Length: 338
Image (cartoon, rainbow, N blue to C red):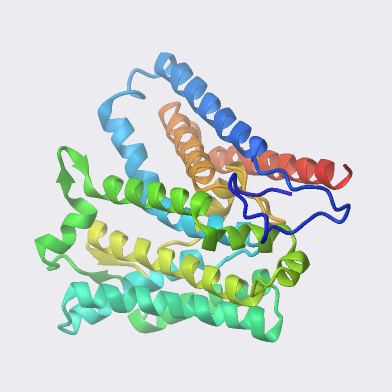
């Protein structure tokens, strides 16, 4: 089993053998250190392979490429820890963009439109969570259905036509296009969210229930944890984080395209799994997931600079995901046989 470092002895579910639960998560720390090492080695190797790799322009481009998507990764990681998965995040990101754009074009203040869009995104998560906790559907099936439904809503609301939002006020565009002390505001927002969420997930008594539920749902239930409620609100959080990302994308691009975000869920899930989140629940960290996303970004940038065909880029990313899932499976098999 995999738990945060500070466990409450009274709440922690016990293994079937009755032995004590190990409080330290050394495996996750090793995964994070391993990812840091791999990223460092790739960066050093690419600095020799291409003189453009370690330039500020390229580093800035890499950071911008995954900063907004990283917000979605945070929500997905917490959902994976609780034992769920959400295939609709790409559609929800697009939905938030479309809702923000439509309301703004109708004369609504962009900040109010953004809050409505994030709330609507959270509502999508609430419906998925309701299907899981009330009806008993699997997270995979419920989110797959809403992926299609929400994408259809995006196309219906826009009639399949991109919305031009270049008249958005400058103060709103700042969150997606502005800089502070020479650093893009998007990156600062992303770093703040990662730091806060990683700290809270590791230290908060409330969010430890996420680990308990994902590690052993029955034991968590017997310990007095409302498992259904935990799953429900974590699902809402995942969709709301996708909504927030959609709002920032709107500010960054000044447009809302109904086909935006197709395939984003695969990249997000891949990053979380590479970072140590288990598809079976009970393990993972926000920092690990962000490092997984950073690794994918470094790989993508390297392949572009090395002039590798876009078709082969997808093959290589798929192989990296396959390797991460295989390692996750082997580690889980090893733990269950002990």
